[in-house]
Amino acid sequence: MLFPLRLLFREDGGQQQAPLSTDAETIDCPCHDNGSKRGEDTGQTPQEEKNLATEWYRNKLAGAIMKGIDDYFQKTPPPGTLLAWQKQNRQGGNNISHYRIQRGDTLSGVARKNQTTVSELMQFNDLRDDRVMVGQTIRIPAS
Image (cartoon, rainbow, N blue to C red; front, side):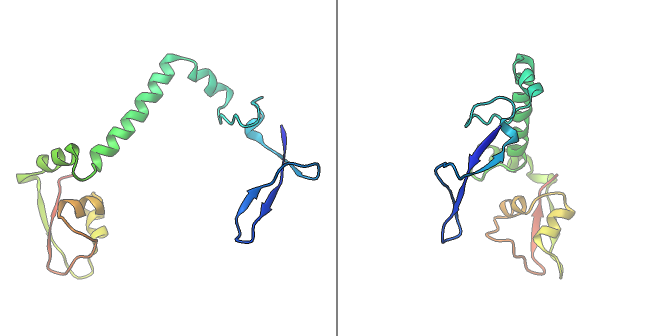
């Protein structure tokens, strides 16, 4: 389908869509080639539409989304939540290692070497920023 579209450029560099007129440019919009009406951009292919019609596929898709969300929050729980408390208590005792910062070390480098994230190290060690001092000892959570 072809849709007439004209953009006006404001003085501050932004864009705004102008009312359509007879002298407007015409552009090809491939996302609407599936017969959708203007404004109904579903972004779906015909096969995806068929798949979404089945309950099995919808359940599979919902399960994959839920697993991704769950994995993310298990790995990086927001501070002050039950997940953060559980993660910190699981890592107590023998699962904690210590690392003494040496010249040239950065928190991101230490995190990478220990397969963790900077935010996780900062949270685990109650750090306000990512600066570390030579000789400083930080706790490394178990991976």
